Image (cartoon, rainbow, N blue to C red; front, top):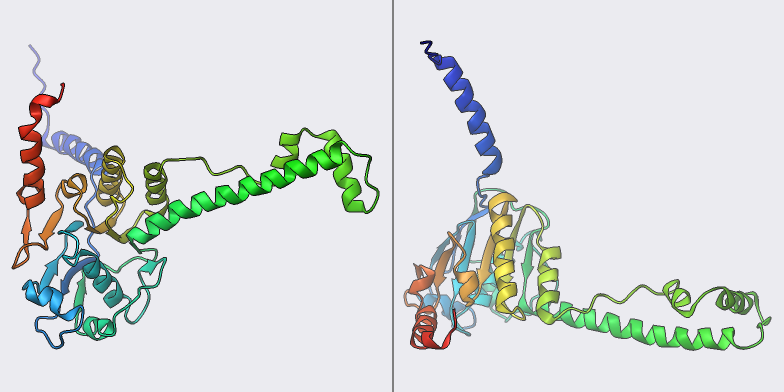
Length: 304
Protein backbone atom coordinates (compact mmCIF):
# COMPACT_ATOMS: atom_id res chain seq x y z
CA UNK A 1 0.00 0.00 0.00
CA UNK A 2 1.20 3.44 -0.90
CA UNK A 3 0.66 6.15 1.67
CA UNK A 4 1.17 9.81 0.66
CA UNK A 5 2.43 12.01 3.49
CA UNK A 6 1.76 15.66 2.78
CA UNK A 7 4.77 17.86 3.38
CA UNK A 8 4.54 20.77 5.78
CA UNK A 9 5.17 23.18 2.90
CA UNK A 10 2.25 21.69 0.95
CA UNK A 11 -0.05 22.00 3.95
CA UNK A 12 1.03 25.59 4.52
CA UNK A 13 0.47 26.47 0.86
CA UNK A 14 -2.99 24.90 0.93
CA UNK A 15 -3.86 26.73 4.17
CA UNK A 16 -2.68 30.07 2.79
CA UNK A 17 -4.77 29.65 -0.36
CA UNK A 18 -7.83 28.81 1.71
CA UNK A 19 -7.19 31.76 4.04
CA UNK A 20 -6.96 34.16 1.11
CA UNK A 21 -10.34 32.93 -0.17
CA UNK A 22 -11.90 33.48 3.26
CA UNK A 23 -10.38 36.95 3.59
CA UNK A 24 -11.92 37.96 0.27
CA UNK A 25 -15.34 37.38 1.84
CA UNK A 26 -14.63 39.16 5.14
CA UNK A 27 -13.79 42.83 5.56
CA UNK A 28 -13.09 44.57 8.81
CA UNK A 29 -15.71 47.14 9.82
CA UNK A 30 -14.44 50.69 9.91
CA UNK A 31 -14.87 53.35 12.60
CA UNK A 32 -14.40 57.04 11.79
CA UNK A 33 -15.57 58.77 14.95
CA UNK A 34 -14.43 56.83 18.01
CA UNK A 35 -15.48 58.99 20.94
CA UNK A 36 -17.51 62.11 21.72
CA UNK A 37 -17.44 64.04 24.98
CA UNK A 38 -20.45 66.10 26.04
CA UNK A 39 -20.28 69.01 28.45
CA UNK A 40 -19.88 67.62 31.97
CA UNK A 41 -21.25 70.63 33.85
CA UNK A 42 -24.24 72.93 33.57
CA UNK A 43 -22.85 76.36 32.73
CA UNK A 44 -26.22 77.77 31.62
CA UNK A 45 -29.81 76.68 31.84
CA UNK A 46 -30.42 77.35 28.12
CA UNK A 47 -31.09 74.49 25.73
CA UNK A 48 -29.27 72.15 25.15
CA UNK A 49 -27.05 72.68 28.21
CA UNK A 50 -29.30 70.96 30.74
CA UNK A 51 -30.50 68.01 28.61
CA UNK A 52 -27.65 65.54 28.92
CA UNK A 53 -26.13 66.90 32.12
CA UNK A 54 -29.35 65.94 33.92
CA UNK A 55 -29.08 62.46 32.44
CA UNK A 56 -25.45 62.20 33.67
CA UNK A 57 -24.48 61.49 30.08
CA UNK A 58 -20.93 62.69 29.51
CA UNK A 59 -19.22 60.43 27.00
CA UNK A 60 -20.13 58.35 23.93
CA UNK A 61 -17.96 55.59 22.55
CA UNK A 62 -18.94 54.52 19.06
CA UNK A 63 -19.06 51.23 17.18
CA UNK A 64 -19.62 50.70 13.44
CA UNK A 65 -23.34 50.97 14.26
CA UNK A 66 -24.37 53.08 17.26
CA UNK A 67 -27.99 53.76 18.17
CA UNK A 68 -29.59 56.40 20.39
CA UNK A 69 -32.88 55.10 21.76
CA UNK A 70 -35.51 57.00 23.72
CA UNK A 71 -39.02 58.41 23.72
CA UNK A 72 -39.88 61.68 22.02
CA UNK A 73 -38.16 64.50 23.88
CA UNK A 74 -35.34 62.28 25.16
CA UNK A 75 -32.75 64.21 23.14
CA UNK A 76 -32.04 61.70 20.33
CA UNK A 77 -32.28 64.24 17.51
CA UNK A 78 -30.52 66.93 19.55
CA UNK A 79 -27.61 64.57 20.10
CA UNK A 80 -27.24 63.88 16.37
CA UNK A 81 -27.25 67.62 15.68
CA UNK A 82 -24.68 68.32 18.40
CA UNK A 83 -22.32 65.68 16.97
CA UNK A 84 -22.79 66.91 13.40
CA UNK A 85 -22.32 70.59 14.19
CA UNK A 86 -19.33 69.97 16.47
CA UNK A 87 -17.55 68.06 13.69
CA UNK A 88 -18.52 70.78 11.19
CA UNK A 89 -17.46 73.61 13.52
CA UNK A 90 -14.27 74.53 11.65
CA UNK A 91 -14.90 72.87 8.31
CA UNK A 92 -18.05 71.35 6.85
CA UNK A 93 -17.29 67.65 6.55
CA UNK A 94 -20.77 66.24 7.10
CA UNK A 95 -23.31 67.57 4.63
CA UNK A 96 -26.96 68.18 5.43
CA UNK A 97 -29.81 69.17 3.13
CA UNK A 98 -31.33 71.76 5.46
CA UNK A 99 -29.54 74.21 7.68
CA UNK A 100 -30.10 73.58 11.38
CA UNK A 101 -32.23 76.11 13.22
CA UNK A 102 -30.25 76.68 16.42
CA UNK A 103 -31.11 78.05 19.82
CA UNK A 104 -29.04 80.99 21.04
CA UNK A 105 -27.00 78.70 23.31
CA UNK A 106 -26.31 75.95 20.77
CA UNK A 107 -22.96 77.23 19.45
CA UNK A 108 -21.77 77.93 22.99
CA UNK A 109 -22.54 74.34 23.87
CA UNK A 110 -20.78 72.68 20.91
CA UNK A 111 -17.70 74.83 21.54
CA UNK A 112 -17.29 72.94 24.80
CA UNK A 113 -17.69 69.47 23.24
CA UNK A 114 -14.84 67.32 21.94
CA UNK A 115 -14.56 64.35 19.61
CA UNK A 116 -11.87 61.84 18.72
CA UNK A 117 -11.36 60.10 15.38
CA UNK A 118 -10.01 56.66 14.61
CA UNK A 119 -9.97 57.40 10.86
CA UNK A 120 -10.52 60.61 8.89
CA UNK A 121 -14.19 61.22 8.12
CA UNK A 122 -14.69 60.83 4.35
CA UNK A 123 -16.12 63.58 2.18
CA UNK A 124 -19.69 62.72 1.26
CA UNK A 125 -20.64 61.84 4.84
CA UNK A 126 -24.16 62.98 5.70
CA UNK A 127 -26.63 63.92 8.39
CA UNK A 128 -30.10 62.80 7.28
CA UNK A 129 -33.03 64.18 9.25
CA UNK A 130 -36.62 62.95 9.30
CA UNK A 131 -37.56 66.21 7.56
CA UNK A 132 -35.31 65.27 4.63
CA UNK A 133 -37.29 62.06 4.16
CA UNK A 134 -40.66 63.81 4.18
CA UNK A 135 -39.41 66.57 1.87
CA UNK A 136 -38.27 63.94 -0.62
CA UNK A 137 -41.76 62.39 -0.64
CA UNK A 138 -43.38 65.80 -1.18
CA UNK A 139 -40.86 66.69 -3.91
CA UNK A 140 -41.66 63.50 -5.87
CA UNK A 141 -45.36 64.31 -5.65
CA UNK A 142 -44.82 67.89 -6.77
CA UNK A 143 -42.66 66.83 -9.73
CA UNK A 144 -45.36 64.44 -10.90
CA UNK A 145 -48.10 67.04 -10.46
CA UNK A 146 -46.11 69.53 -12.56
CA UNK A 147 -45.52 66.93 -15.27
CA UNK A 148 -49.22 66.07 -15.31
CA UNK A 149 -50.03 69.75 -15.86
CA UNK A 150 -47.46 69.97 -18.68
CA UNK A 151 -48.96 66.83 -20.22
CA UNK A 152 -52.43 68.36 -20.23
CA UNK A 153 -51.09 71.51 -21.94
CA UNK A 154 -49.27 69.44 -24.57
CA UNK A 155 -52.38 67.37 -25.26
CA UNK A 156 -54.28 70.58 -25.94
CA UNK A 157 -51.44 71.88 -28.13
CA UNK A 158 -51.33 68.63 -30.09
CA UNK A 159 -55.06 68.68 -30.85
CA UNK A 160 -54.92 72.36 -31.83
CA UNK A 161 -52.17 71.90 -34.42
CA UNK A 162 -53.16 68.41 -35.55
CA UNK A 163 -56.77 69.09 -36.48
CA UNK A 164 -56.57 72.67 -37.78
CA UNK A 165 -55.02 73.99 -41.01
CA UNK A 166 -51.22 74.26 -41.00
CA UNK A 167 -50.14 77.40 -39.15
CA UNK A 168 -47.68 79.47 -41.23
CA UNK A 169 -47.47 82.32 -38.69
CA UNK A 170 -43.85 81.49 -37.80
CA UNK A 171 -41.26 78.80 -38.33
CA UNK A 172 -42.00 77.51 -34.82
CA UNK A 173 -45.77 77.11 -35.36
CA UNK A 174 -45.13 75.64 -38.82
CA UNK A 175 -42.75 73.12 -37.29
CA UNK A 176 -45.30 72.10 -34.64
CA UNK A 177 -48.03 71.74 -37.27
CA UNK A 178 -45.84 69.46 -39.37
CA UNK A 179 -44.67 67.45 -36.35
CA UNK A 180 -48.22 66.73 -35.12
CA UNK A 181 -49.03 65.27 -38.52
CA UNK A 182 -46.07 62.89 -38.29
CA UNK A 183 -46.41 61.72 -34.69
CA UNK A 184 -48.99 60.16 -32.43
CA UNK A 185 -50.04 62.17 -29.41
CA UNK A 186 -48.02 59.99 -27.01
CA UNK A 187 -44.80 60.32 -29.06
CA UNK A 188 -45.35 64.09 -29.37
CA UNK A 189 -45.66 64.43 -25.58
CA UNK A 190 -42.74 62.09 -24.81
CA UNK A 191 -40.45 64.14 -27.03
CA UNK A 192 -41.12 67.18 -24.85
CA UNK A 193 -41.28 65.99 -21.23
CA UNK A 194 -39.83 63.11 -19.25
CA UNK A 195 -41.98 60.32 -17.91
CA UNK A 196 -43.44 60.76 -14.46
CA UNK A 197 -41.37 59.36 -11.65
CA UNK A 198 -42.79 55.95 -10.85
CA UNK A 199 -45.65 56.20 -8.38
CA UNK A 200 -44.49 54.54 -5.17
CA UNK A 201 -45.99 54.33 -1.73
CA UNK A 202 -44.42 56.62 0.87
CA UNK A 203 -42.46 53.65 2.19
CA UNK A 204 -41.10 52.69 -1.22
CA UNK A 205 -40.19 56.31 -1.95
CA UNK A 206 -38.35 56.60 1.38
CA UNK A 207 -36.47 53.34 0.80
CA UNK A 208 -35.46 54.51 -2.66
CA UNK A 209 -34.25 57.76 -1.05
CA UNK A 210 -31.95 55.87 1.34
CA UNK A 211 -30.70 53.65 -1.47
CA UNK A 212 -29.58 56.77 -3.36
CA UNK A 213 -28.24 58.73 -0.38
CA UNK A 214 -26.20 56.00 1.34
CA UNK A 215 -23.02 55.38 -0.60
CA UNK A 216 -19.84 53.42 -0.02
CA UNK A 217 -17.35 54.83 2.49
CA UNK A 218 -19.06 57.37 4.71
CA UNK A 219 -20.19 58.40 8.16
CA UNK A 220 -23.99 58.63 8.30
CA UNK A 221 -26.03 60.20 11.10
CA UNK A 222 -29.70 59.35 10.57
CA UNK A 223 -32.64 60.67 12.56
CA UNK A 224 -35.61 58.28 12.88
CA UNK A 225 -35.27 56.59 9.47
CA UNK A 226 -38.35 54.45 10.23
CA UNK A 227 -40.63 57.41 9.50
CA UNK A 228 -42.86 56.54 6.51
CA UNK A 229 -41.43 53.00 6.37
CA UNK A 230 -43.75 50.05 6.85
CA UNK A 231 -42.21 47.12 8.78
CA UNK A 232 -41.23 45.21 5.63
CA UNK A 233 -39.37 48.28 4.31
CA UNK A 234 -37.71 48.81 7.69
CA UNK A 235 -36.34 45.27 7.39
CA UNK A 236 -35.00 46.09 3.93
CA UNK A 237 -33.33 49.21 5.35
CA UNK A 238 -31.79 47.07 8.11
CA UNK A 239 -30.26 44.83 5.44
CA UNK A 240 -28.93 47.85 3.52
CA UNK A 241 -27.31 49.31 6.66
CA UNK A 242 -25.78 45.95 7.58
CA UNK A 243 -24.23 45.47 4.15
CA UNK A 244 -22.83 49.00 4.02
CA UNK A 245 -21.40 48.66 7.52
CA UNK A 246 -19.88 45.22 7.03
CA UNK A 247 -18.56 45.42 3.49
CA UNK A 248 -18.49 49.04 2.29
CA UNK A 249 -16.65 51.06 4.96
CA UNK A 250 -19.65 52.88 6.41
CA UNK A 251 -20.28 53.90 10.01
CA UNK A 252 -23.79 54.67 11.25
CA UNK A 253 -25.10 56.73 14.16
CA UNK A 254 -28.88 56.34 14.29
CA UNK A 255 -31.64 57.82 16.45
CA UNK A 256 -34.61 55.46 16.52
CA UNK A 257 -37.22 53.58 18.54
CA UNK A 258 -37.98 51.07 15.77
CA UNK A 259 -37.64 47.47 17.06
CA UNK A 260 -36.33 46.40 13.65
CA UNK A 261 -33.50 48.93 13.63
CA UNK A 262 -32.77 48.42 17.32
CA UNK A 263 -32.21 44.72 16.64
CA UNK A 264 -29.40 45.42 14.18
CA UNK A 265 -26.73 42.82 14.99
CA UNK A 266 -23.73 44.18 16.91
CA UNK A 267 -25.30 47.64 17.28
CA UNK A 268 -24.34 49.55 20.42
CA UNK A 269 -27.49 51.06 21.95
CA UNK A 270 -27.57 54.01 24.35
CA UNK A 271 -30.82 54.18 26.32
CA UNK A 272 -31.55 57.90 26.66
CA UNK A 273 -34.61 57.20 28.83
CA UNK A 274 -32.38 55.84 31.58
CA UNK A 275 -30.73 58.03 34.23
CA UNK A 276 -27.84 57.75 34.07
CA UNK A 277 -27.76 56.91 30.35
CA UNK A 278 -26.48 53.36 29.87
CA UNK A 279 -25.95 50.90 27.03
CA UNK A 280 -28.39 48.01 26.69
CA UNK A 281 -29.30 45.14 24.44
CA UNK A 282 -32.36 45.83 22.30
CA UNK A 283 -34.46 43.22 24.14
CA UNK A 284 -33.70 44.91 27.49
CA UNK A 285 -35.35 48.19 26.45
CA UNK A 286 -38.64 49.11 28.11
CA UNK A 287 -40.67 49.55 24.92
CA UNK A 288 -39.39 46.27 23.50
CA UNK A 289 -40.60 44.48 26.65
CA UNK A 290 -44.04 46.09 26.18
CA UNK A 291 -44.19 44.85 22.56
CA UNK A 292 -43.16 41.39 23.70
CA UNK A 293 -45.83 41.22 26.41
CA UNK A 294 -48.52 42.44 24.02
CA UNK A 295 -47.76 39.83 21.37
CA UNK A 296 -47.28 37.12 23.98
CA UNK A 297 -50.74 37.82 25.42
CA UNK A 298 -52.27 37.74 21.92
CA UNK A 299 -50.24 34.89 20.39
CA UNK A 300 -53.37 32.71 20.07
CA UNK A 301 -54.82 35.22 17.61
CA UNK A 302 -52.02 34.64 15.08
CA UNK A 303 -52.30 31.83 12.56
CA UNK A 304 -48.93 30.21 11.85
